[in-house]
Structure formats: C-alpha cells, structure tokens
Length: 54
Image (cartoon, rainbow, N blue to C red; front, side, top):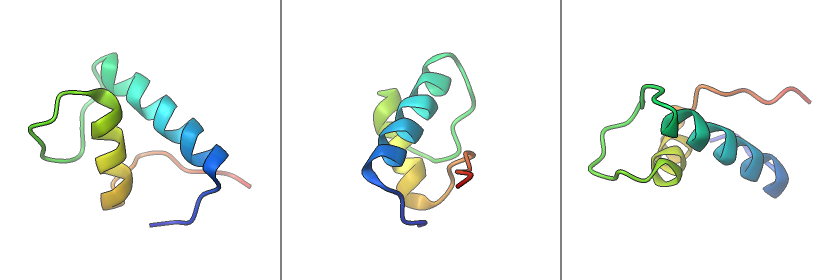
C-alpha cells in the first residue's frame, strides 16, 4: 500500500465510498454492505482505482 497522509486518506476514502454508494462496482469480495468499509477494504488490499497526483 502506498503511504498517504491522513488528509489524502480521508479524501480518497470519502470519494471512493461515495462512488460505491452511487452504484460503482466494488473490487473486493466482502459481506460488508457499508460503502466506507468497502472503500477501506479496497485501500488495504491495494485495489483502489484512485491515484494521487502530488
């Protein structure tokens, strides 16, 4: 996993959980239904479809 600042992490998780809540496909297998938890799992597994440009 890439090292993100806490601000980057919050922004990424917020944006991705909104995408998931709006019906975007999820890239991890999970029984979880909460978008924020799915986004966290994607981030932890390195399957997050978001990049950070610094």
